[in-house]
Amino acid sequence: MKRPNLDSVTTINADGSHHILHPADVKGRFTLARRLVAGLMIGIYCAMPWIPVNGAPAVFFDVEMRRFHVFGLTMVAQDMWVLFFAISGLGFLLFVITAVLGRIWCGWACPYTVFLDHIFRRIERWIDGDATARRQLANAPTGWVKIIKRVSKHGLYILCSALIAHVFLSYFISIPRLYEFMRQGPLEHATSFAVVLSLTGALYFCFAHFREQFCILMCPYGRLQSALTDDDTMIIGYDEKRGEPRGKATDPTAGACIDCKRCVTVCPTGIDIRNGLQMECIGCAACIDACDDIMLKLKRPTGLVRYDSSRGLAGQTRRILRPRLLAYGLLGLLGLTALGFTAFSRAKPMNADVTRMRGPSFYLDPTVVRNHFQLRLFNKRNQAMAFSVALENPPPGFVLTGAGENLHLNALQELARPLVVIVPNSAYTGSRTLTLKIHSEPGDSTVRHEVEFLGPNPHLFRQP
Ligand code: SF4
Ligand code: SF4
Image 1 (cartoon, rainbow, N blue to C red):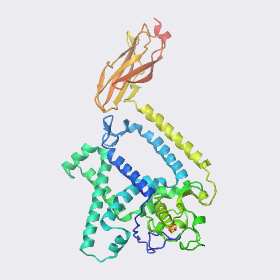
Image 2 (spheres, helix red, strand yellow):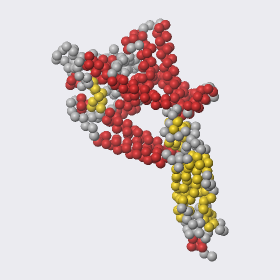
Image 3 (spheres, protein in one colour):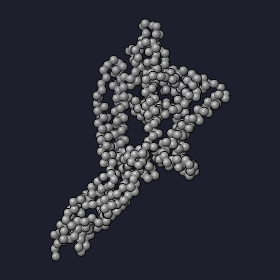
Image 4 (cartoon, rainbow, N blue to C red):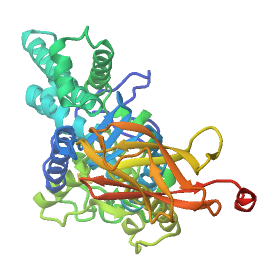
C-alpha cells in the first residue's frame, strides 16, 4: 500500500499518472446513515420528473417552451432574475453549513459522492470482491475470469451512467417526451441523443476511471473549504492527545492508536487522517467507523477519530457563534428572504402586465376621451383558466372596453389584448389614476394594476 504523506497526493504517482486506490469495506453507524441518506437522495433525483405538481413535473426546466416549473411555481424566461436570489441565498446557506459542519455536503449529499460511493463502488465490490480481491484482480494477468469481470463491471457502469443521463435529460424534456424520443430513435432527435451520449460518456469516465480525482483536483467547492472553515468548524479529526504515541495494544506506555492503519485503508482519497486535516478529505466518515470498530474490539472508548472541531480536538471549548457565521448567515438570510418574497409574489396563477399602447397618449373624440392600453396575460397553470378584467371602483362615467368578462386561456397560454378606457367629455375632469383588476378562476387570484388615464387640460377643454 502506498504510504500517504503531506508532501504529495496519494492518488497521483510521481510521474503524474493516476494511482488507483482500492479502499477497504467498512461497516458502522455513519456508513449505514450515509447509505440511507444516499438512497433518499437517489430516490428524490429519480422521482422528481414523475411527481406532478400543478399539472407539471415537480421540477421541470422546460427549455423548449422557456418555462421553468419548480414545485408548482411556474417561471418564464423574464423571471430568471429570481435565480440571482436563489443562487446567492442557497450559496450563502452552504457557506453557513460549511462553516459549522465542514465538508458535510461532500461526504453525505454531493451527487458525485452519492453516485460514486453508493452505486459505482458497490457494483465494483459486488463483481470484483473486497479490496484485497480487487487488488489481486488488478495485478492478475489477463484471463477469462478477468475479462468476464471487467466486461460485466464496465457494462453495468455504462448502463448506470446512461440511466443517470436519461433521468437528467427528463428534467428538461419531461418523462413522456423522453419516452417518445427513445421510441422514435436517435436520428429523429439528434441533439437530445448527443446530450445523453456525451453525458453518459462523461459520467462513465468520471465514475469508472477518474473517481476521487474529481474531488481532489477539479471541484471548486473543495478548493473553497479552507477559506470557509476555521478552528471551530466541525471536521473529521484524529485525537492526537489521546492517540499518541502510537504503539501496540499491549504496550502500557503507548497511546490509544495501535497504528493498525485501518483508517487509512478505508479512506477513498488515500489520506492518513492522523496527519491532520487535509484538503483531500471529503468528510465521508469511513475512518470514524473503521477506528471505532477497532476501539470496540480492544474494549477502549470510541471516538479516537471523530467529528469535532480543531479546538475541540486540542481539548479546548468550541465556539458556536463566530463573526463569519453571522456574516454568512445574514447574507444567506437576505438572499433567501428575497427569494421567498419573489417566489410568493410569483406564485399567482397568472402573469398580467398592462402597458400604454404606442401612439398618442389619449384620443379626443367628439363625445368621449379615450386611452388605449395593452394587456398581456399569461396563464401559468397547467389547466385552462378563465380571467375577468374590470375597472375597480371606476369613477363616474369611466368604462373599460376591449376585454370581456371571461377571457379563456388554455394551459400555459399567453394572450395580448387591447384595453380601451373611455369617459364621456361631460364626465371628464382631468387625468387620474385608475385601477384595473384582473381576476382568475379557478385559483381565485387577483392582480391589480394602476394605470394613468391621460387627457387634455380640463379647463382649456371645457372652453367653448
Ligand atoms: S480522511 Fe476519513 S473522512 Fe476524510 S476522506 Fe478519508 S476516510 Fe473519509
Ligand atoms: S484506525 Fe484508529 S487505531 Fe487504527 S491506525 Fe487509525 S487511528 Fe490508529
